[in-house]
Image (cartoon, rainbow, N blue to C red):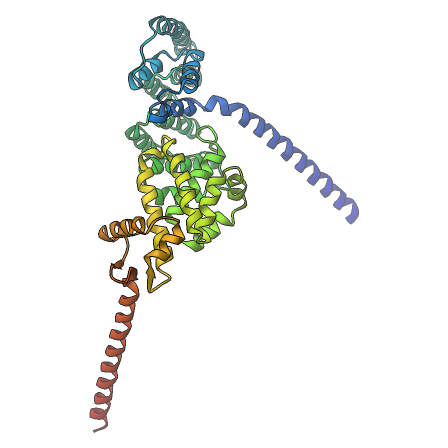
Amino acid sequence: MLLTKMEELNSSSDEAIFYDAVSKADFDQANNSNIETLKNPDLEIAQLEFWLRLPEFLDDESKRNKLLECITKNNMAPYYQHVCSTLNWTVNTTLLNEMRDANSKALQSFEDEIEYACIHSGAIDIKQAYLNKANYLSKIGDKENTIKTLSQAYANTVDFGSKLDNVFHCIRIGLFFSDLPLIRSNLLRCEDLIEEGADWHHRNCFRIYQGLHAIATRDFSTSCELFTSSIETFVCTEVISFDQFIKYTVLSAMIILNRSDLKKKIISNPDVLQAMHCNNSLKEFVFTFYHSEYKKFYQALAEVEADMKRDMLLYPHYRFYVREMKIKACDQLLSSYISLKISYMADQFGVSEDYVEDDISHFIASKRLNYKIDKISGQIVNVRSHGRAGMFENLIKQGDLLINRIDKLSRIIDI
């Protein structure tokens, strides 16, 4: 009897596992098929435009042709006008008119679909008709009309998941056009929806969008907190790849976390290590800092700086970031000593003594490092060590005074 019962349980368990596997496979297949749809607008196109604004890529024909190919392939007439304005391209009137004609025909069919849905269908079909139009407008780079049409779709949306997808699309538009106010306003809308009710997937995606906004606004503390807590649950592939997400996570963690937290959240994390395996400069950046290999660290920092200059989210902050990491590295070395020869520090970092002295003096003047330079002895003196010694001496004096008062008080009580 017991054996029969166990067989039934095993059978039902195997069946449950089978259906779970099938369900997961179906989910993964559906999820993968939706990634391309959700990559709208495609941020890689915006990244191409950004590259062509940089001095080193101004005359890069391959990138120019690749961007133009993306524009013509998708008939991106509104975006083509935007690009011609920002990159000072000469407008190809024939090409522009051809793309406009294609846009007009497509938009007319979407208008017909909306009109039919409004007359013959319910709110769900009306919402979908507006979304179809909004997706097309987003694909061709028509920012204002995309936001307007998404708003019309939102007005006919009932469930929280679809509402959040709508607002996420608005945020992606903001990221595509580097429109921080648009991103910020829609993140606030998301917060209200998340509080009312949202599933696991949308909550995780929301954290990624929040983190990207934090990166764009130089709030590395927030991006570090959001990204490091989302490594195991990352699902937001419609906006960035996992490798790119890890890069942002590591850069945020390096500037914010102390050594013990860096070890726990980054260096000992297998997902991070696997992703960094394909990014040698990022890997060197992390490990040389952690192991105090400052000469190699400075070389890795130069590579990270070059990469940040080519990233449209990180570019405005690369000077700030490099400066902060230099301060952190200098403090990590100097804090271990009461005083340190400038020549020794220059040798450790693989730079000249004048370079070290110039950097340290600037950091001291801006009150970012609590040290002083002794020009006569050629040393950098740890002011904090002397400060601690003074505090200790003061504590001993106060303790002696307290003991004397207690002794006097005890004599009075005895009398």
